[in-house]
Image 1 (cartoon, one colour):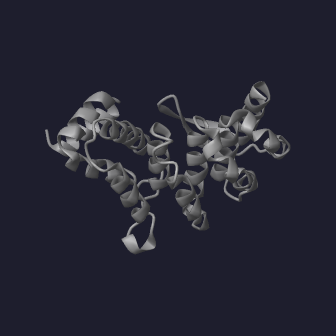
Image 2 (cartoon, one colour):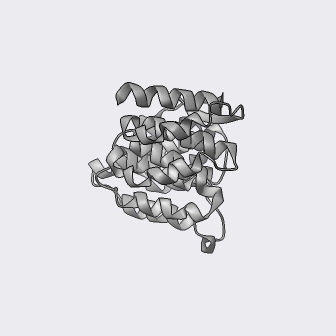
Image 3 (cartoon, helix red, strand yellow):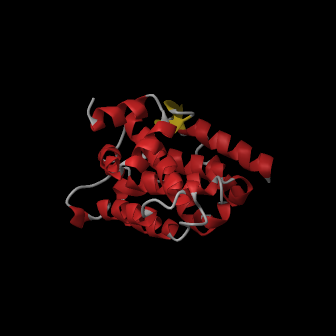
Length: 217
C-alpha cells in the first residue's frame, strides 16, 4: 500500500491516532492532507481538516515541527499568487486554532481578512463558529460580520453564519433578532456534524441557534 493509500484509508476509517503517529514519524505525509483541501465539498476534506487539527496539536505537544509554518502555508494557498485555490484552507486553519486557541489566536483576524474573497466566506464563518465554541472571546469582535452574513446571497454562507452564532452561545444574544429573520428560509445546505455530512434547512439551523443562545444567556 502506498503512503497516499494508507493516509486515505486512515482518514476513511477516522483512525486519527494512527494518522497522528504516522505523520509525526514522517511529516511529508502532510502533503496528502493538503491535497484534499482543494475540494470545496465532500466528506474526505472534512476528515482531512479534522486530521490536521489532531496532528498539529500533537506536533505542538511533542515540540515536533513548526505549526505556524503549516498555517502560513495554508494562508498562502488562499492567495491568488499561489497559482491554485485551497477552498478549505480557512476551515483547516480554524480547526488548528480550535485545538490550540491561545497559541494561535493571532491568526483569527488574518483568516477573517480573506472575507474580501467570496469563495472563502463559508470557511470564514465556519472558523468563527468553531473557535467561538471554545473561546468566544477570540471572535467577539467579528460578531457584526457574522450578523451581516446572515443576509448573504449564498444559502451555504447564511446557514453556516446562523450555526456559528449558535455555537457562541450567550455571546451571540445580540444576534437573536437577526437570526429570527431566517426562520422562513427553506433553503437546504450541507453541514458536517458528528463525523458525517447532513442536509438541513437554514430555518432549522437558525431555530437551533436561537434556542441554544437563549438557554445559555
